[in-house]
Image 1 (cartoon, rainbow over the protein chains, first blue to last red):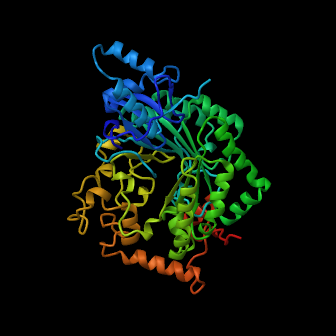
Image 2 (cartoon, each protein chain N blue to C red; image 1 turned 180 degrees about the horizontal axis):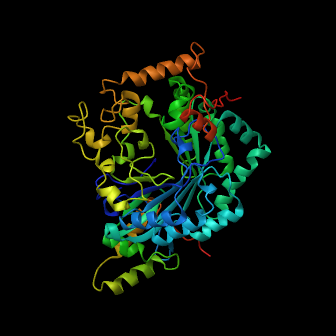
Length: 104
Length: 392
């Protein structure tokens, strides 16, 4: 399985107000033996690079994409990351790691 | 194990732990891959033994855990083992027939943190007919499939196809649609253990496969985005072998019910195995140091045509157990490969299957159902008569 950065998104599902959540059955966790964050799913594992992991860690089904971006900006001041986050959520969606939470 | 997402060049860790908790099983599938002599392994690991194995394997980097058997639901400590495994950080998979399950148990598994359930169906004609007709005997199983979904799991169904069931592939898939399954695995029998013994009864013909494959593709197309269908072509009909276990001792570690550690669940039969046991050795020693796990690592052990083959890093020469069963030497190329000088044993088996299916020849042995009585009879020929009969 390729790392997320190598894949280009083809669609646009998420806007600033979308609230992404991890798809049931998938699990994000720190994997000591791999020295990285991974997504576990039935019979497999995807290793995340550090920037993908920083975004995934903030996807909790309560924060919107805009809130995730501002949180990341607080953690990494001065880094221009809006486009990276929007691109990542689309990729993560296509990979079926996340999906948008339906509006209440 | 199918559909693995691992890349083969990850560091050498036992990423996949298959915990065969017991050989006990309420079913008697003729295609079971358990060893024929399973009845002689009586000394099952205790709950504490398993917990130690889980801890040790997890420490070495194991991330995926499959609870299998036999029927793992037979073990009354399953809930406890799931909870322990989940707490250690494993992704926990339960591979079950659903027999022995009820809502209380599914809820307990959920509470213990079980991540994933795969329900397998026998897909024998009788079972299928019963399923499709909706008789009492199988209402339970369908109910279990639905309950799995109710508790927030994907409904993952596995049907084993063979000569006597593959023609019903359309009925199988229609049933899956009715159940609203999320993922369906149509796995053609692989010939290990009981399935190898019964191969003349189970190997489908080329014509059957040619009829089945378009049906699988039709449903894949029709249900795109709704139901994922994984159709596995039987390796006997391929000309290159499968990358068995992603390479020997590369990612898979099987622990048999008696604590024997194996690089794959069929490896016990290979001559010259020392069969290290977790009762005597640490998982770390077994994985890193034991002669068994190092025996077919890398490429040094290979003979021709594998040794100089440009594809050896892709398929690792195929399956060691199949090479042994069909050529007599585990270091030979898997004869599925058409570069193997033994490839004719595969084509001979296919030709023979066609003649048997056409009624021109008959199988040398009656079909033998997997149960302790037949297992003991094979161990001790003469004292017990194998209980063999043809399916209705």
